[in-house]
Amino acid sequence: MSGVPIFPAGVVKIYESPTKFSETFDLKNFPTQKHHGSSKWRSEKFYNVLLHESLTELHNWVKTCIDDYLVNEIFMKYSDYFVSESWLNVNQKGGSQPVHSHPNSILSGTYYIQTLPELKEFIYNSNVCALKNNAIQSVFSDGNPSSKIMFIGEAPGADEDRQGKPFVGVSGQLFDKMVGSIGLDRDSCYITNIVFWRPPGNRNPTSNEIALCLPFLGRHIELVNPDVLVTLGGPAAKTLLGVQQGITRLRGQWHTYRIGSSGATIPTLPLFHPAYLLRSPAHKRETWWDLLSIKFKLVEISE
Image 1: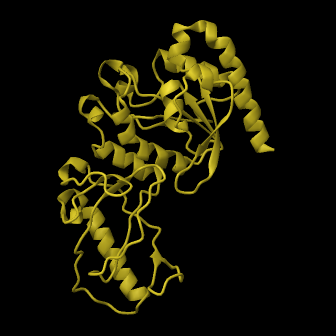
Image 2 (image 1 turned 135 degrees about the vertical axis):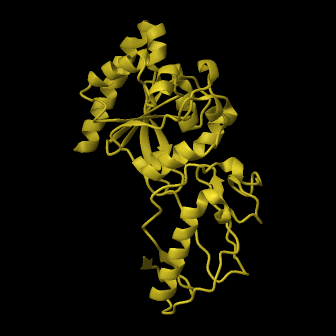
Image 3 (image 1 turned 90 degrees about the vertical axis):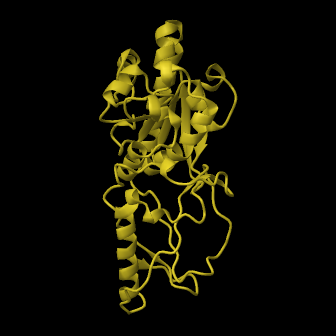
């Protein structure tokens, strides 16, 4: 815990966090108030979510933080208090809340998903998108989260759904050859998709399904913080870049992805999806030049 002396009232930052969310945590357990301000989703204002059994661990941790604050910041020990209100927010990419106050509270605080393990556990144990209902399991990521390069595909397929890792089927074998051609492997890159669950019948994810996963994808990118982003296929490129052009027009040139909360930018290169290259091998030549561009970009960044 550290004090931040920037307001008349005391502000502290606490860096420890609960070890995990309960395995029964599910957004559907909470009454919903949709589209509040810039939020994509918000629990009902007057429902105290910390009292739900699935958030017992988080509730206990919050009370421990309050105890520490009382003792270390205002030098008193006081146990006769309670959490009067608590709610959940899922924000849009780059979203924020307007300046406001909580006039009936003595203390207010915000808990953010701060680490990849926390985000992964949240995705595995919550139900932010109906795609999860028909999937075998969540497919979060594969590879090295400390890598300088992050690849983002569209959605898990049948093989990925069974194994719980992205790009492990026939298209995954081609992906391994593609990155191997420029000296990379799964230990030196990081891989995920724009949605975390297989759409039924391997269909494309809908715009609504993508929108529900997008805030978590944005946080995923922010936590990995790669030097280079590579999108695989048209849907991933359109989602990350916020454009409508097809992959044929987007590939072959570098674009910019902007991290919502910080405003930082990441050079981003769209590639044909490996599954598309299996169907249309004539485009492998163009993809080879794109792969070389990635190799040169990584060298440029390292210098």
